[in-house]
Length: 271
Image (cartoon, rainbow, N blue to C red; front, side, top):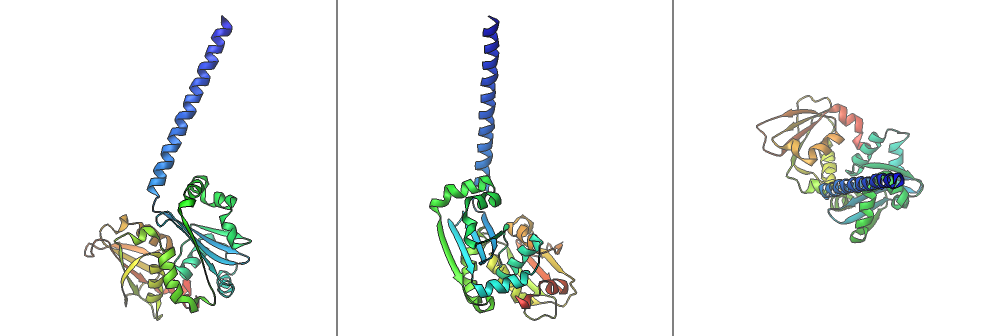
């Protein structure tokens, strides 16, 4: 009789354990699918630095595209010279942006550029759930690979087309955020340089101009609802600017003023 009661207690604990595991599995599934739904427009970007070159990779759930841009030997060598001995990952991400208007989620250092697609590399950098979603959707996505040859400056027209079409951020393309860019330095062409990179990223720039007020680094003046945009998050990733709200600006309108410190830091004329 005692053995029967003991077995009953063990069976009850086993059943309760199974129920608990099922409950946890359901919670994880709900959390995963909520995250999947919330991130359905999110592009995942990889900056590749390899012994055989440089590459940009964009995995876009919105466009159902996987875009890869391989940078030819001449441009890769130029890019690596810019990188120099830089070890700070955040600065390397900024260097990618100042060259391509492309702000990577991750920087991958590999032997070969095409190793980015290896499952172990993707799991380590995207995380298991994002990798699982990538593999689940892979059959529905189009893989498009392109390559540019020559120096970056010789390929600006090609980059204008490729980067806006294939590598700009989907969420930015769908937003109503409008930017005005001001050059507050004596460096000619800074506003145009910044505008091009912002447009490559997916921002809508409606005007550029020079301004005489003294700006040390950069200043953002913004109107209502600007800080609710996805673009607000991206801008603050790229630039460490002072910020000021102006109720006289239109809704979703932002002005960015670039000063001497930022112009000196990016050395934009060398890119």
